[in-house]
Length: 355
Image (cartoon, rainbow, N blue to C red; front, side, top):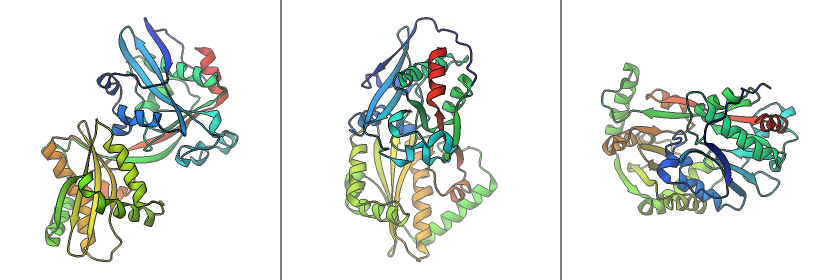
């Protein structure tokens, strides 16, 4: 494993905090790549989760916050969420088979399968190096490997510039509609044609549509979402749905909205989160049906209502999740890979010692 040569940053210092004691604007300015999932109020909710111990590696240059990276260890010896277990990622079994949860330091996030990397990256990459060394020292003191789940390209590029010791694999591809508030944004003739065809289908179905808050929609939306997830082999229950959304409604920096669309025979919902200038499509609830109007309800919920809503609100960016790539691509989505990274305990110790 090679490590880039250290170049100390003037007046920078790093420490580890047990609580997210950061000013919100300064924290969010460090990284917006993961959206609401890496928002300060969401991270503070993890601090209350007894399955995880949360800490933050803080970097300060003079009086400026340059890093505030969440790091987590499991309280028990098993993974609270199998999606974060590197043994399930398809990495070389020789790297992961002897890697239990209590020998890992998870960096970035443990909720929502998206992780931010809140570091103010400078042109020389020195902030990334300094914070990674600080994280490695925290892990090495406990003989742990470093695990980076669901990392965005911004983080992966910065980390790879520090050391070639990471083992990476693709975990998911997140879809995005960008610059949706710009009426002149580039769009291919194929995409325009697909959207026109959608609108004709939606108009023919005569949908009854609305946008409400979660409190208004909960009684109908919770069972629809639970049934939809269960049908897709993700066990769920309406009470679990209510619990998830209760958490989001307690986040002061987000707004939870519910899109609804219905015909006489089919009704569905889509939940979404407004965060800064972004609209994140969260969960859909749509009953199984052979009715031809179901596709109109689906298209309206997944594409046309969110696009119209974002434009009305002046929201620039729609996050559209990690499933159903083909229909999203044909309507203009672009994709970003979310990666899982592992730095073995031995490599972590080497990095910590190299400083």
